[in-house]
Image (cartoon, rainbow, N blue to C red; front, side, top):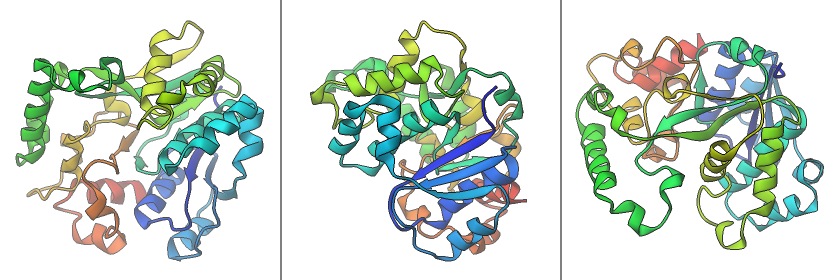
Length: 311
C-alpha cells in the first residue's frame, strides 16, 4: 500500500496564497493522513503560512535536500541538483528522492484535490497520470517536431479552442486527436519502488547536454521511463483523473463565463485538478485570494473549484 502522505515541495521564501490553496485542498479533500509542505528556504511568516500551521494534517517541514538526494541516488544525484539553476528543475529532482525514500504522493502546488486518493493508495505500487498534448517528449524537442503538419494543425486548433467562449466544451470533441503523455505533477509510489529507483537512475545518468533543457528532469524523463519500464505494478491513469483540461485549454479555468458549472469540466473519476500555473496564468496567480474566489464564484471555473475544495 502507498503511504497516505502527500508531499509538496517549495523553493523560495514567499508562498503565494494560490499555492497555499493547493495544500489546504489536499488536507481537506485528498483523504491523506499527513500533508507535508517541504520547504528548502525559510518561509516568510505571512497570513497564508499561519493558515497552514493551523490546518489539521498539514506539516511544514524544513528540508535539507542534500542528505535526501544522496540517500536516494548517491553523490552523483547531489551533483545533478547542484547543476540546476531553475527552481522547477530542482523540485523535479527532489520529488523523485522523496518518493523513492519515503513513498506517498507528490503533488505540484498548482493542483487542487477534490476527492479522496484512498482507493488509488490501496492498490499499492506506483502511479502517475496522462494529459493531452501537442508535443509529447517522445516526438522530440527540435524544430522539426514542431513543424510537422499534424502538430501544426493541432496547435492551431488548440489555440482557437483556448480563445473561444466555452472552447473547453468544443475541444472535448477533438481531444482524441491529441496524443496522451504522462505528467509528473502527480506521482505516487511505495517507498523504494523499482520504478522510482529507475527514475532516479535515469536522472543521475542524464547526458550533460540535456541537463539544462526545460522539462528534461520532469515530464520528458518520466515519459521515457514509463515507455521503457519493464518492472511490476506501475499504473498510468487517464487524463480525466488529474488533467481534465489540457494545457492551453486550461486557460478556461480563469476565463469569464456566464455560469461556472464544474460538472461540465470534471468527470466522475476526477480526483484532482492540475491547473497549469506555467500556462498563461501569471497575471492570475498574484491576485487570487479568498476575496477573489468569493467575487468570482459564479463566473470563473477556478473559483468554483477552489470553493468546493475548501468546503
